Length: 458
Image (cartoon, rainbow, N blue to C red; front, top):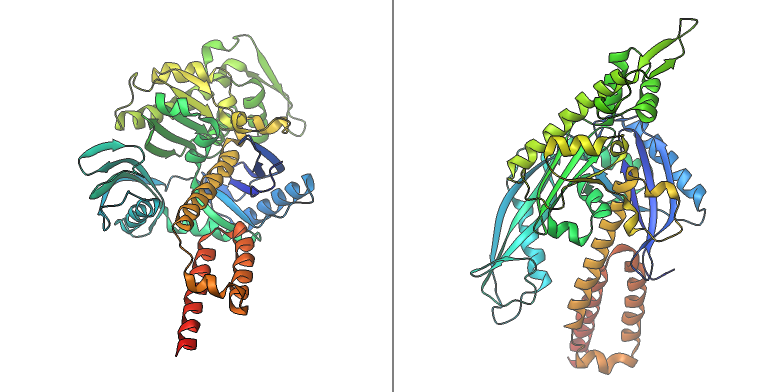
């Protein structure tokens, strides 16, 4: 196990379940699962936290189960998934004129360009969750995937900006904090799921990731290596369960069980003469339910969800055969029988089920390779993206630092020892917290030393 890599934790606050997974990358870049816990979710509807107390209880239960799977774990910071019908997205364009045109474009300038997009005007009551660069341009050169190392006067990009309702975001953050955790970042659930089930070849071919959860169906569309569109559709597995409950006059638990055990997304594939016997309530006679009727109800709702997917693909002009990678279904709802056939029929695109196991190291719990945990595993991968980005940025900035002669001369003095000692302790701290504070402290140390040198000179 590669102990230099940090342990990153994903927290998926879903409508039907809350999952906590702790993972660390091994030397082959695969995720080793160090802890896993789940709990039933009660306070969440259609991906939004409505009852904070119930959600806190569920997060704590999932956390306790995670600790039970590995008592040596310490969990403080988590990456949290966000969904819900309040999620919206918009496209913007941003440019900066460079100050040092004789030098190559650096990561710092790209970060500045992205940071500027957080000032984009959005409606009152909304908040920007994420800013994702699509393709860059340097001077007159367009469609550059990564402009670092290029030379030019002006650098710009098209951006995909994801926004959400401030209150909904506050409710998630409050639930996480009151459960004794710190939310490191909020990640849009379809982006997390995409990270878990998608490879580089999918990105190039163009795919639509459709994550059918309990409360929402999340969509992320990639084309020519770029995130083109995201959407949250407010229908999913729980709507199907409620339709069965109402349509067949059964309890919700019975409806869920029938959906999982006998459900099919295509009525034509269901046996005409097959029946399910449901025991009667409190001495009432048992009920005979037709498997065909059950499939009709499921197909009606699933077709509606797929109509929404087709609508969103049409909006970005990718509803025909341009997505060579087709549709990748993931999430708990993707396990319905005959859903692949229904999806292909409804959208006209090829379809497959996306499992998160391609990023997992061997020897993990079999349960975790199910599409149900795509979001949670994707959250850990997104956390690693952040970690790698911060580390690379720190390394490139640190390389450009020249240690001044005054500091070298003073290396044997007490002041320098204190600075170095403080720097080392800060470095250890920042292996957990990110590297920006350490860099600031190091600079401050050098400045203080120069002040003291000036004092001695006077």
